[in-house]
Image 1: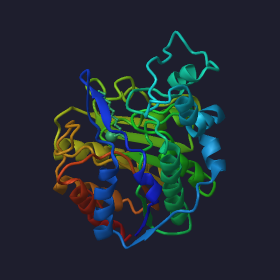
Image 2 (image 1 turned 180 degrees about the horizontal axis):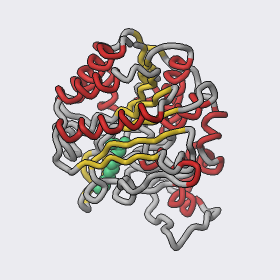
Image 3 (image 1 turned 30 degrees about the vertical axis):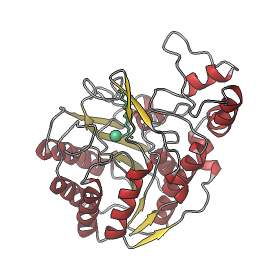
Amino acid sequence: MITYFHPAELGHHVRTRLYGGSLIEAVEIPDRLKALHDAAKLCTDEFVQPAPADMGVIAEVHDAGYLDFLKTGYAAWKERFPDSLELRPSLHPNAYMRRLPDDLLGRAGYFIADGASVLLEDTWEATIASAASALAATQKVLDGEVAAYALCRPPGHHAYRDMACGYCFLNNGALAATLARRAAGRVTILDVDVHHGNGTQTLFYDRADVQTISVHADPRTTYPFYAGYADERGEGAGEGCNLNLPVDVGSGDAVYLAAVKAGIDAAEKFSPDVVVLALGLDASEADPFACTKVTSEGFAHMGEMLGAMKKPTAIIQEGGYPSPILGDNLIRFMNGFRAASGA
Ligand code: Q9C
Ligand code: ZN
């Protein structure tokens, strides 16, 4: 299996995160990518640097004004606030305020959903490199490979058409599915990150050609709180094409893997030509987010179950944060996936 990775993904070093009213040490940091990179060396065959991302695919998924903001917003911010290192808005529109203003501060609040999604000088470079890895891995699968791994950072599944959210700027999984749809009739995005794939769900909510399935900790108690409930099933032509499988906080292997199994059953019923696997590793018992308690053995089984689908699969890295076993979890997952799929 090939790992697609671009060194620019090691940029975008945000130092702090807002938690319980305090700024504490950030977890979506370059070090987590280094740990995954070291692990990928031990469980995949080859590293390939992706070609630049196809802006046509990105423009199909994301809003033009939003893309312009991601590209140019930081420089404009720096001009206005020369001493600031981070673009972090403090006011965001809500259900009662939906106007897109011209002013930079207004646009920043409009295009950024939360305090987790900070823009730095090199954020766009990292983001576009991350998207390039996702697209290259997907193209490899469309070219006939059983599976390919995109070592993406920043992650993507919380990103909306016109909003950064939850450390995500461009929705790598949605980009992968959009590219895949050019060659394949039906695509399933199966998301096993411990957080609900809210951006992905929204992007395909009314579509019957891209099935979206997310296994995650219950949003009643876990980020992103406002979406990810089982009664969100898609709308219009997409009715029934979105499946949310929330599990209780604190669940271990048995419950988490049963939900993954339910997701696999639904995917098999849909019978996709290509699977986009949104591989978050933050359901781990050792993850700093401490939502659920999946073990390394559990990740091995998860890999086996997903590999046994034997579908052409683009594996897109999502969350998974620094812990002593982050890399081991990737290795165990990949070894299980490869043994079962032949990838
Ligand atoms: N108290 C991914 O795993 N948490 N995103 C903010 C504020 C954001 C996780 C919590 C968690 C985002 C890709
Ligand atoms: Zn996550």
